[in-house]
Every structure is written in structure tokens, then in C-alpha cells.
Amino acid sequence: MPRAAAPDRLISVACAALFLLAGCRKDDAPAHLERARTALFEQKADVALAEYKLTLDLLERDSSAQAQVYRARALRGAADTYYFELQDSKRAVEVYKELITTCPEAPETLDGRIHLADLLQHEFRDLRGAIAQLTAALARNPPQSAELAYKVATLYFELQDYGQCEIESANVAQRFETSGYVDDALYLRGQALAMIDGRREDAKRAYREVIDRFPDSELRPHALFELGRLTAESGEGEHAIELWVEALKTHPQPGVVQDSIARVRKRLRATTPQRVGDPAKAFDWDVPGNAVVERPVVEPPKPMPKTSIEAVGGTAEEAEREAKMQAEPK
Image 1 (cartoon, rainbow, N blue to C red):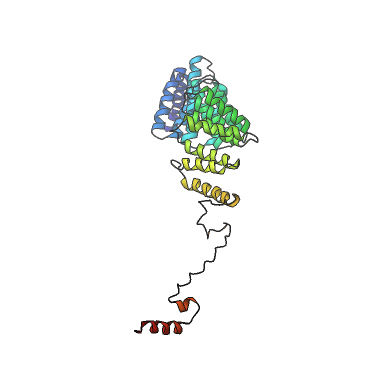
Image 2 (image 1 turned 45 degrees about the vertical axis):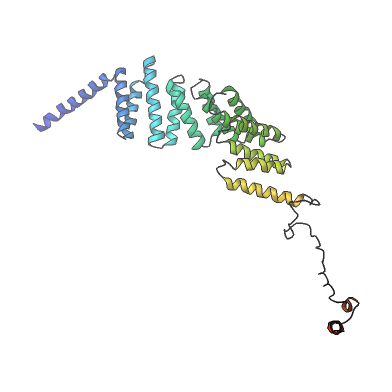
């Protein structure tokens, strides 16, 4: 009897499997997505990935608009799971790229491009690939456009493409003039210009704009310091010191500023001729580097003669005898 029952059980299992497969419809996609979200909440990343895979398998031959919505959500969810939960950068990049290729216009693709840019920059050092993804994201005019545009500028600086960095940072300051990234963009523009031959004066103007337009910016003391550095390189040491003294009030690294001030002061002392009557040098007899001045030799005053004998060169004994004779009564 047991042997005869085995085929019946196999037939039952097969029928159940066929029934389940037949019951898989597009309408089941939201359920799989919901189970994936629940699994992530319970920190079951593998279970979530399995649910995303079931969603994609279910929609494989479905080209409807609704299916495309679910497909984008499943791909984005799977890519984020690889990236943030499992730290599997390689698989995350693969799935983000599949999302971009399969669903280029989906809302999920915008954030997918931004996450992909982060991975390409930090994990694979593909800076130009990151720029391409951010540029594509900017083409859709997202709410965070100012931030993304500034990030593009920083990537060009990292590539040492200072000319393009200057263009991109100027674009941020002009196009997004009401955003919180304008002072960052102007400061970055100053840094880029300072690295380009012949653009020192332009760099100074960029730093000065940060200083004047954004008095409360945390970048202001840094702009003062960099402006001072460029000013010192132009041979204006005293003006540079003035800028650094101003920067000292709020600079987060005052020791760095003080070291620059000390170096320039030392150079000024070594290269500036000592002026006659300079009050700053009047009492610096022993300061190394000062001119050696011969001090006049002053002889002590001679004592006044006590008597007439001493006045004409007589000895002290003769003077004493004269005094006794004058004291005797006549």
C-alpha cells in the first residue's frame, strides 16, 4: 500500500506547483514588493532580494505601463539592497545600470543615477562616469539640482580639470543664486582659478566675493586665509598679514594662520632695510639680524677739585697742610 501511494503524492505536488504558477499574475507584483519592504524592515536582506527577483520574473514578458512601474520599483529596491544593506558594490552597480537601461524615465531612475554616481566615485574611482550620471540626472531638473551641479564642479576639481571646474562652479553661482551652495561654489571657483597660470587676480576676486557677500559663512575665514596667501605671493606681505589677522577671529585652525603670519613677518624683517630712527628697531640692540651699531664710550666725569692747591695740580698732602695753616688763628 505505501508504495502505491507514492505516485499519488507526486501527482498532488505537481498539480499544486502548476496551480501556483498559473496563479502568478501581474497583480501579484505589489504583494511581492510589499513583502520585500517588510523583509528589509526585519533586516532580512536575502529575503527581500528573493521577493524583488520574483517580481521581476513575474513581469518578464509584460510590457504594459503598469508593469514598467513595478519593474522600476523592484530594480531600484534590489540595487539599494545590494548597496546599503549588503555593501555589495559590484552587484549594486550592475542593477542600477539595468534600472537606467530598462526604465530610463521612471522616478526611481533619478535617485538610481545619483547612487550610481556615488558608487562610481568612491568605490571605483570612475570620476568621469560619475559626472555622466549626475549630468543625466540634472537634465531632469530635480529639486536638488544646485547640490548636484556643485558636486559636478567638485568632481572636475578632483580630476584636476581646473578650467572646467571654474566654468561649472561659476554656473552654480549664477544659475542657483538663491541656493545655499553659492558661497561653496564661489570658494571652489577661487581654488580652481588659483591653480590656473595667470588667473591669480581672478582668484582673488572670487575669494573677495565670498568675504563680502557671505559675512556669516563658515567659508569666510578660509577665503580670507587663501586671499592672504595669494596676496603674500604677490609681494604684499603687510596686507597679507592684515587679512590673516582678520581670519584668526573665526578660523577653525588658528595655528595654521599664525604660522603663516610668523613666516611672512620673518621674511619682512630679513628683506626690509633698517631705517634711521625706526622706533620699532630703536631698542633692538641684541635682536639677531639687526644692524650692528657701535655704542659710544662715555668716560665718567672727573671729580671737582676740593682746594686751590688741588686745582693747580698739588698733591693731597700739600692741600692738607694748606688747610691747617688757614685754620690757625692769626
